[in-house]
Amino acid sequence: MPVPASQGVVAKSLLRDEAFRALRDAIVDGTLQPGERLNDGELSAWLGISRTPIREALARLEQAGLVQTRPGRFTIVSPMDVRETRAAQSVAAAMHELAVRESVPQLTAADLDAMRTANEHFAAALRDHDVDAAVAADDAFHEVAVAVSANPVLRSVLEQVTPLVRRAERARFSSLTGRSSVAAHATIIRLCEAGDADRAAAEARANWLTLQLLSADPTDQENPCP
Image (cartoon, rainbow, N blue to C red; front, side):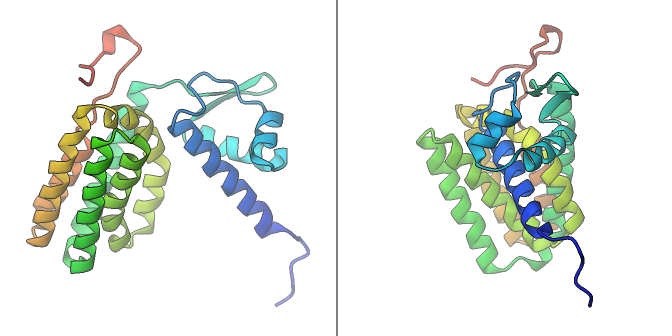
């Protein structure tokens, strides 16, 4: 086939994706705080890449609801919006319910062992008050069903909504409330092993809906995590 005239397409794409992931993770883990102004030059110096992939990454982050841009004025990290996070949470719960339902008939003993190992790491991270490790282990647990389902649309939707949920969830994993998920995970594993796709899927959905969300609006305040 003729070689396209454009060059460096792959490299540019990789830089854009790298910038997107780095900025997304920094927003989710709180390195970049809600309301913080984002300067292209400072971000470029921090990540060691040019401003073009930074701007492209920021555009994607705005679509994901993680930054807000006022053209010609400023870009800031989006404040926590409880209604938007609730909406993302509902979608994430539905997607994980679907992932479990589709994956149960295909789960192997190795897959179930991977879920158990992830849950053990999750419990240990909570005991150690290691929020980063807890989030990583929780991701690893749920990733088993997502991977086995092999549903690319499901994965695409989760990549869009999960960062919004994770921002709120990090606060939950910092508290004792997050420990209830260890038992929920164990129940999901047991039902998956028994081949009960419907009940396992329902438990997965319920697990994602247990997150307590806080609102800055006193008229829309839920019970805070203990």
